[in-house]
Image 1 (cartoon, rainbow, N blue to C red):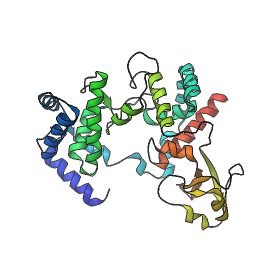
Image 2 (cartoon, helix red, strand yellow):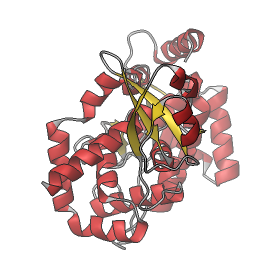
Image 3 (cartoon, one colour):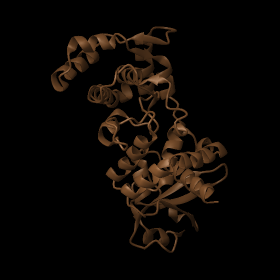
Image 4 (cartoon, helix red, strand yellow):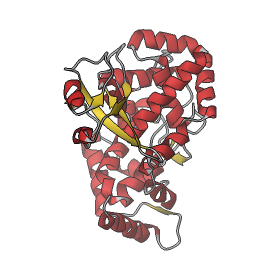
Length: 328
């Protein structure tokens, strides 16, 4: 976010909340009126019911504060320390043991390795220990109406959340989640819930908050729907000679360079990778120097969950540590 957008967000938030306020009711702005109009016209909600609901919703300053300092802003060597801990590795092994039958069934059905599913839940919520302290509706309303840089995204998610609550027969004031409105063990946004959440135990509910079977299957389904390749590798560490390899470093996470070209640039890619295979060369900042990796298609799929290459690498490395520990 550039500084001008950040300042405008803060100014608007201060106007809505008032000096020194931690929370405030939703203001009757043009944006709010338009949202209500759209929900009535496009989603067939009752206007009076919506207005009564929003009277019980709070725009919260702590949510705006949290939005300004995401963990992905840290360099890799600091970011990695958040997730590659003894507690999170041991917790992953225990989660595996506690849900072994479900994980085996889901892996067989969807083709996504158990350790990848576990690592996602481990990174997102530490296996359900930290699923969020904010009401989902407060988070989405705050960011939709008081955070201009991403208001369009969060208003769409607010719409999806209200539709979700109606479909699932959930009181919209009850679900809890992150400061960004992500929900349950796998921290699905409302649109992801509607698109990917599964009722794996067939009890008639897609419960990603307290039902680990539904959460596990939902993560697997998310990956499959984003073209996970069963049995495919995720990433490999590589080394490089000279500086020519830097030509292949670039923005984004989608594979964009074939292995043959990387080898011509001095990258020592694993011999099992065919020269024609397309990969993404990634550099991860250490306290001294950097680590180089090549991300394959399945690495890119992990980034569909969170677009940060730091996030995807943390998930991958945690998954490997969990699997190694369980096998030992």
